[in-house]
Image (cartoon, rainbow, N blue to C red):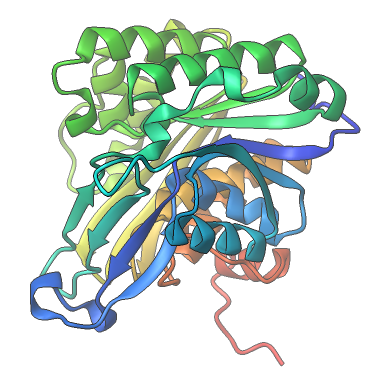
Length: 358
C-alpha cells in the first residue's frame, strides 16, 4: 500500500448524510413503546468515531437543513465526538421540503430479531454536490491522510454518486488513501442496477482499501460469493479468501481487502470474525463469540478500527485485531458508534480481558 500522507490537517475525512435514529429502551419493539431514545447517526460517522475518540483530527462533509432543530442537534453531537464538519445549509422549502432522515429501529431481544425502518423522504443528503466543497483547499492546502467513502452515500441519488466519484478522483490526485465500504442496500439499488454498478466500479478502481461482506461484493459487482457448505464460519474461511482473491483480480489497484464474518446465535450473542488481505498476506481474526447489546454499527466499528490502525502505521497483523475489537466494542453501546476511552480498552477486548480496571 502506498504510504500515508504526512503533515495533514485531517487524518480522516468522511462524506455523509446525517440523520437521527430513534429506538425504544430495553430492546422493546417500536409498536409496543411510548418512550424513545434519539441519537444523531450515519454509517460514515460511525466509522470515523473510532479515530475521533482516540484523538485524531476528523472532518465530516455533509449538508444541513437551514434553521432545522434536528440540524442543530446533529451539529452538537458531531462537536461532542470531536469532529469538525462543513456543508451547505439548504433552505427547507416549507413543511414538505427537505429534512434529515429518520431511522426508526429496535434492538431486538433473544430470539426476536431487530427491525429497522428507514424514513428518508426529502432527505437533504441527496443534494450533496461536489461544487459545494473546495477540493483544492481540502486535499491540497489542508491535506487528508484517508478519505473514507460508503456505498450508502454513493447510492443515495445520481448527484451523490457523482459526488463520491469526484471526491475519490481528487483524493487520488493529491495522494490521499481512499477507503470504500460497499454497504449494498437493495432498496437503494432497485431499478438503478446498471447506473450504480458503473459508479461503484469506477470508485473501486481508484480505491486503496476495499471493504464489504460477501453479499456486497456479489451484488455490487456481480461476483461469485463464498461457496456454500460447512457448519460454521471457521469452515468457510477458505471460501471467503477465494472470494477476496476474485475481487482482487478485478480491482488490482487496491492493496487492502477486508470483510467481516458474522453468525447470529441470538440477538444478544454473535460469533464474530474478520479477514484482511494486505498485499499478498492474509490476516484473520478467527470467529469467536461476543455478547451483544445492540448490533447496529458493528461493521462500521470494524472499518473504523482498521482505518485507525492504518493511519497509525501499525503492522497489518494488528489491523485485523484492532478492527475486530473495535467492531465488538461498538456492539456494547446503545449508540450506533463506539466511543473508545483509549487504545488499551480496545486491545483488552481483543485479548478477552473483561476484568474491572481501577
